[in-house]
Length: 144
Image 1 (cartoon, rainbow, N blue to C red):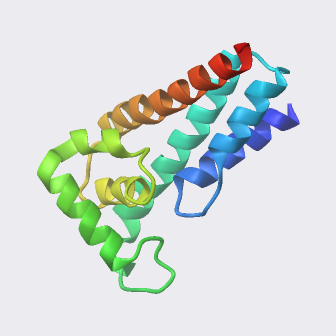
Image 2 (image 1 turned 30 degrees about the vertical axis):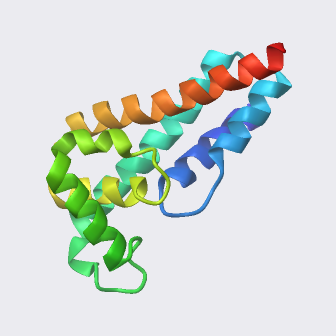
């Protein structure tokens, strides 16, 4: 149970602007073989999506503090993510898993008032899909 909590926490933190490596934790647990792969995939996805929901909430509620040093995204990151979001609309959230731009993108979705239901749906597909590919690669390597 501690391993699953660790995976959930790593995935949640990795989805915020706090640096964390949920992929390494997931791969390690898959290779260890102590838990069903589907459970590891579900826990990692749930933690990562919840972290993105936190970003969405921060964007929605704290945007008036974007000029403060403690704000979780730099002005440059916000501008880049906003341009991306305006160009592609809510489908840009499919890139929420991409390093560097993904986390600010989820923050911008909150700033731009993306409906939570659609946000969660698209982000779950994106982040769950990334973890699924990672798990399939890991299981394939383990089988060799």
